[in-house]
Image (cartoon, rainbow, N blue to C red; front, side):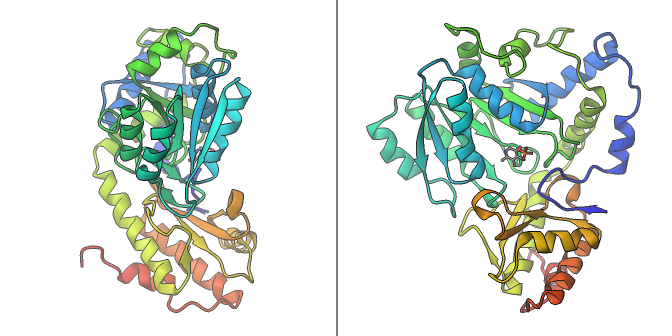
Length: 375
Ligand SMILES: *Cc1c(COP(=O)(O)O)cnc(C)c1O
């Protein structure tokens, strides 16, 4: 099977083999502890900072929830800046831990707009922090988090950024962008199976977590337990060594390549193929280089296409949230970035559209192969 979905992504055979080596005891094996701490340093390196990073055992949603549970105390106001499914979803975690979400909705077809935010903050900036998403994976939009987080800092508002489907695929400078908490996941651009949440945290956010008036209302969703053991030989619970080995090798591979340019090139080529075919992309601007969201004609649903693609040996993603039924998504990130795999995917899609009597202006496969970003 070819995995071209928007996460979990393909995990290369070499990485899977490497993950299975030397499974010992993560609490006692000194070699494991060294690799674990090295992996945390590599996360910070990937996002260009000396700020602390740590890894929590659990799917990326754990990081989003734990950021809210660790930072919120009863009655705290939090600004939820949203232009998509994941951005909106922060609301639920904020409410769950006693915070008051204040919703700032922006155009769902474009990237977040800093001028609108500026106008808003001029009137009201009394927030403990704000939440936002870097890559809105359901809509295929990459938000300009550099502009948004810098502006938030000008108003003294901390930022929590969901970078689950951008970390390792898009350039992130944690310090320059003025991010306070960055949340990543293992199963998107990093191409490690799902099960790890990656957290990078600023000194300001760390001091808020460590100096709360009330205790954090969870043991597992708790940054403090990780921060207090940072750099030591202990973890708050037993870690998963094969996932950490996978993350370690993945981060080293990514840091050895010009991963931002590679994602950009493939992103442009995939988008171009769909545009040339006459199909419409969902976003009007701020196209993501890690995932492409394609609007479908009215007479067909996402599930019909996705199911038929599976029969042909290829996984792509259906729509999510308000785009359920109406869109399909290709994840061109991490180990999915293989020219032959993309060609096989587009070939299968060309066939499926033909079968379903949807006439394309030209073949997706040919447009992809012909397009050269350098001309
Ligand atoms: C994948 C993803 C998550 C994690 O959600 P799951 O769908 O449970 O994997 C969170 N935020 C974003 C932006 C994501 O793409």
